Amino acid sequence: MAVAVVYVFTILLSIILTWFTLCVRKRQVGEPPLENGWIPFLGVALEFRQNPLEFLRSKQRKYGDSFTCKIAGNFFTFIMDPFSYSAVFRQGKNLDFQTFAIETSRKVFGHADFNDPIYNRNYKEIHALFRQTLQGPALHNLTSSMMENLQTVMLRNKTSEWTTEGLQSFSFRIMFEAGFRTLFGREEKPSEMENIEPKKFQMTTAMDNFNVFDRAFPEIAAGFPIYLLKKAYTAREALTERLQHKYLKKNHGLSALIERRMNLFDQMPYLDELGKARTHTAMLWASQANTLPATFWSLYYMLRSPEALKVAQTEVERVIQESNQKLDKMKKTVVLSKEQLDSMSALGSIIDEALRLSSASIMIRVATENFVLNMDSGKNVSIRKGDRIAMFPQMIHMDPEIYENPTEFKFNRFLDENGQKKTFFYKNQRKLKNFLLPFGSGVSECPGRFFAVNEIKQFLALVVFYYDMELKDPATPVDIDCSRAGLGILPPKHDVLFRYKLKDCISE
Ligand code: HEM
Image (cartoon, rainbow, N blue to C red; front, side):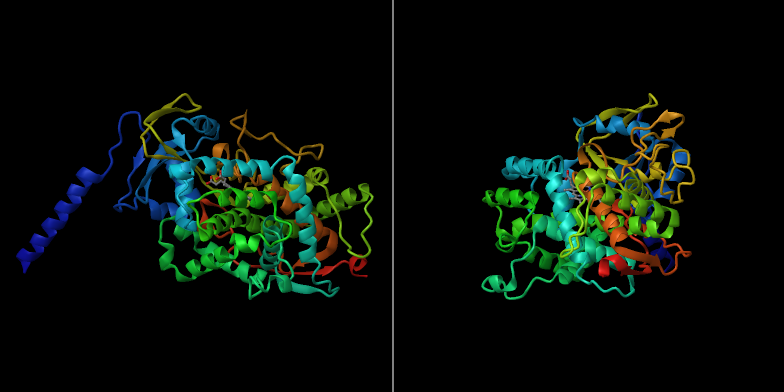
């Protein structure tokens, strides 16, 4: 028996020693300090996932502004110094974003492999559509469509009684439906759809499916096969089923983004109908997954701070009065143009501050060659082909040198002394270019960022205009759920109750 134990022990020890000798990566000259972790393949994944901010802070204290960590089979070199972010963004030649992004998106949404050269030309055109249809002049149409849709959804229930609801449930259901209608249009009347669609598409079902799928998103993005997550898979397929062109083509008020994407996908002979619809599910997710929690936090922080609420009310009243708007007696809706929204700097500051506190996205690039990264400090860092460069802007957002008392909500943090948008933030007495990055930066910067801020501003302006609102328990703070760190805006750990009622002048 004793001989057998020694025998097994010796074999195990030799396997471990062989693994350490042959498989564990060694740091080479010029490379940043390296943490392999002690779990084969996973490396430091568990520690990192538990609390990315604390993990990175502790490694920064140990190693300085750049270090490499093994996480789930990949090597990530973290760049901690915000002044060196631009050095990474300038490395377009040696760093790839698109191949990596398409691979991840394919894993999650099951769409075609757009890295395959057969799609290449069309894919570039499709990607170019983001800017053409979400920014610049195109933003005017989106803004006015969103304004109308928000009010349609909000004013469906015109009760003048107090209603108690979860703040998350309230903000999610209004923003989901209004955002959905703005991009994907709204249905014909059911009678006109009878031949093609037996059941009326239910917005609540779509939202439930979206939530089920979204909750599983971190696991799927990390590589867990969606087929094993039955509920998430069924939810994704139900959303996809409904986003097929045969249904979308019947919708009123499709956005230019979706209409032009549909035209381009229809010209791709290798895509079947479900294949096209899967790309729309990806677009739906991109347009909602961060916007919903960002809206929640903006409203939550505004309601928790009486000062913020007062300033927001004053700003909304001023803009509506200045535009000489009288509520349309029949429709009782207000119109706020893109320019008016741009002029609402107090609401802008509330949103920026909510984004600063809740955003935890990670910017990743993959090295296509061995190369040397010249850091802002003058230090050179060797990067290996296939490794990932990672930047975690939450480090900047929570840096007390840049933002005094960084965990506190200050509604006017992003306002200068003239009440205009503040753009000067410093570290080591140097002005920072990258001080607020909820939307990423460089090639991966969110193309929907202007629309996103606009729609949240519209939502805040409208709830302030239409409702009296109060949190049930403003003294008890809601914690942020950090389990999605790396994926964008973090959700609250749980919902909070609030009550609202239409203002008397509106319900009369
Ligand atoms: C508060 C709301 C939002 C936040 C915080 C946000 C944040 C981000 C971030 C950080 C990325 C880069 C992801 C990466 O580096 O892998 C991104 C990408 C993207 N976002 Fe947003 N986003 C928001 C709203 C929207 C909206 C409303 C839309 C569209 C209507 C949108 C469309 C996209 C698209 C299409 C991409 C991928 C771009 C590409 O592949 O080049 N986003 N977003």
